[in-house]
Image 1: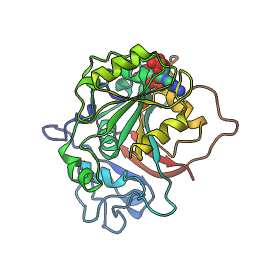
Image 2 (image 1 turned 90 degrees about the vertical axis):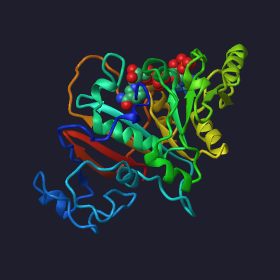
Image 3 (image 1 turned 180 degrees about the vertical axis):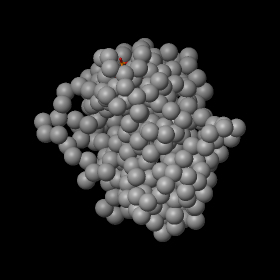
Image 4 (image 1 turned 120 degrees about the vertical axis):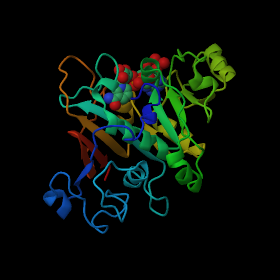
Length: 303
Ligand SMILES: NC(=O)c1ccc[n+]([C@@H]2O[C@H](COP(=O)([O-])OP(=O)(O)OC[C@H]3O[C@@H](n4cnc5c(N)ncnc54)[C@H](OP(=O)(O)O)[C@@H]3O)[C@@H](O)[C@H]2O)c1
């Protein structure tokens, strides 16, 4: 989704306009009654639950801090009955369903979208991504960010998520910093029949190659289990559409964080998920819906 780890988008500092995020769901008195420019309301209605809402004590009309966003997007607590690993996807779509414009997602994204993008990375153990997205968007290693350092340390996480690239061809430029100088070794998920010289090139660059399929390709279910076996259970996928489609049909996607961008593109762009369809549409339930400057930030999860 992002070109260059754009979770680096700076905070409001220095900007003339104040960007105000509103919570539209779950609905509270404040959602309905709050005129633009007035405070959000009491702490009880906006408590810092993983289901949505802002941390207690907040009343200023201002941009949400990354810590507040992190509270809203927290992964489900591990424990008895909890689904683990948990795989969430983060995607952006135009109003007319385009997942990219001129081959990239950046033209349909925006500042708040990039802050949520960064927050979701800040919470994840690993970011699963298709090789075409890596190639087209020029992926770089994830950064360690001060805003998430405490949370990550408390959760026993590395300073930044590992990027886990899914590829059959291994037609990747292993001289990229993504492979040679990440904070946490980049993973390359491929099939057992992958070309040995490409596997060797990946490993020589410093990547960790994980076999998650019997042929050339990766079995989505096996990919998720392989990451969990490495202790990475808070999983995030950033697509692209061909990879996401397979994760959906394999039934391993637990959550979709979908940004609806207030833009129309027409054209023949991909949707956020492609490939063969499921036999029966799978229903997800709405967990939360935020709005900023016409962008809608929805969070849906598998019942
Ligand atoms: N709107 C958004 O939120 C969003 C998010 C991400 C990307 N995008 C856009 O989507 C486009 C790229 O997406 P895409 O759907 O074309 O590609 P993709 O899903 O990112 O990557 C497809 C590639 O991943 C590898 N792959 C996928 N499934 C595999 C499997 N089961 N086993 C082994 N390898 C597998 C293959 O790589 P090899 O060819 O190396 O074998 C395949 O060519 C870009 O334009 C990007 O900007 C948009």
